[in-house]
Length: 388
Image (tube, rainbow, N blue to C red):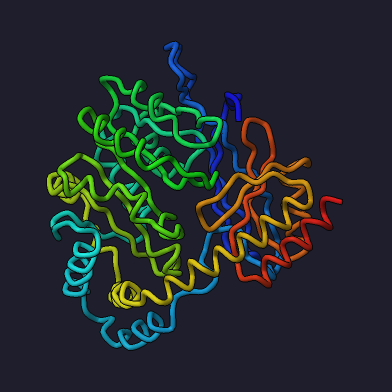
């Protein structure tokens, strides 16, 4: 990919159930500053999904959800905990924090819980950007932290991805100025699915975190065969000002149950929890479910295997049709298409298949989440029908 064009508007949207309309919101991009540097405050990414009315999806492949979860053990734990719904889950939260601290090799004081990793992103942006400033991140990338920072009155320095879709870490560090409050890295990246080399990322985090805090979003990391080789969580134990977010929404299959966590230095955790609380947003049923899911390593390994199988099948089918997907390290795949995005999404939905469409530098792209093998066969059948 070469340097991208820029859009005047950044548009984000949230797609609910197939029978519900699309909820959209607009965020006007500020004019790009003339600095001579390789960054802008405008995005090349534009989500362009149409409004669907009373369409039932046969294959829901539009929200990066795990079609195999939650596990039977999680369901059992949740069912048994319903009777405790009249009590706060403080003890369960403390127990989950202890489990996560042991898993990540840090102290309990280095863990903050919240209802999903997006909650961690947004709370961090609220705390750090309450008086303005700017956030440096890649473009295209996941926008929740950036959108919240801008809603707080902050600005965004968007550094284009490199030609292999990895983060331009040198460009990001060069973009730091006196107003920078935070650097954000989504790795593996959403919506592109690519990964940034862990050795280069660790070096970047060690260097840049001496200047400003760094938030590394690892929502999809556990779909990789050896996530421990790519995580930045070890930098927290070394004392670097790095924040790492994980979620139970992806490989754990608990997207609708809303549990996530942040790993950071004790000082950084205190700076956030002094203004906002995490565990109060969690219910006892979700906490019990998360505790059970951590223990169910066999189910997580199965989800990793099933996701890889669906992805291999989809890649083979899509490439055979002439499409060129970006190599994905996540639970989704994205590739450019040769027809108008909204019309394409509408045709796919008419076939009962829900996907996401984006415009990236004026080129329409299709992002498809990995489902069951049957769902992916529905997707490839529909794709062939609407593109030939």
